[in-house]
Length: 328
Image 1 (cartoon, rainbow, N blue to C red):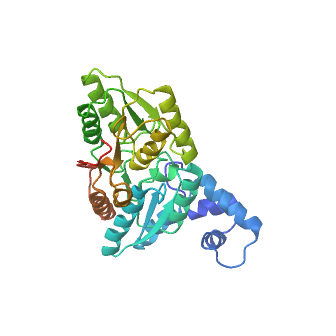
Image 2 (image 1 turned 90 degrees about the horizontal axis):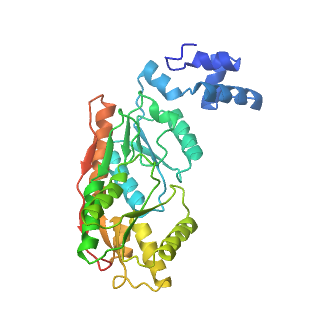
Image 3 (image 1 turned 30 degrees about the horizontal axis):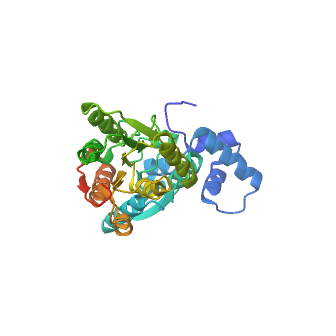
């Protein structure tokens, strides 16, 4: 088979040793099918990386008015609000949404992605963190990413992470902090969010201060974060300022600080990042870098619809602001 073209239904049928009609029945779950036949077809589909929606689009030019969304979790107020805003703007444009929460598990995300492709979605918005999955490399499918780099063909919508890092770090220094730490994701994670760390390091260097970042796994559990943050306080009792990767981490750090005899903001100043409505309601005292969540959602939908209409688009960076609380 020519490896430079997308696999077709007959390729799956040939590899599985069944008819094209049988492959179609397996994919659409129609009629009686033995488990042996289903397994053979599914193995062939997996081996060829065959996606029914791509062929359907090429042959029939069908439009389903369904958009897929893959995000890490609705447990995080930022993603919860972002997903709700995206769904709102898509609904106004007449689109339905299939929502998937991957928990940053690549295998789970791969399964979700294959299911979405089988449902013949018209486009995909992704905010999860597994950017190297093979399904994201399909040129036929319009994709928009939020805060993650997929490839040069996928536009990215993000807040101005660098400016956010500058605002947070300068604020902590202006408040008298000299032993400032940053929490972030993995160092090798290719995302615009790395600009927060880069800004933190640059501003600290400009002020002749050491810049130390504690890196957390993208799949870190609550217990994992507690362990890492406890380690920060134990290893660096001199800490007097923290620029947290997000508001959830900032909130956890505020709670843990008390255990180590640190009063916020008297002994320790903390700044978060996100500024979601729920967090502002539950932690009104938190000083944070506010992302324009509504605008991120609106622009992501605009870019995706433009891509569906085969219009050229570019990545967009949106401005941030600092919300003053009492933690810094």
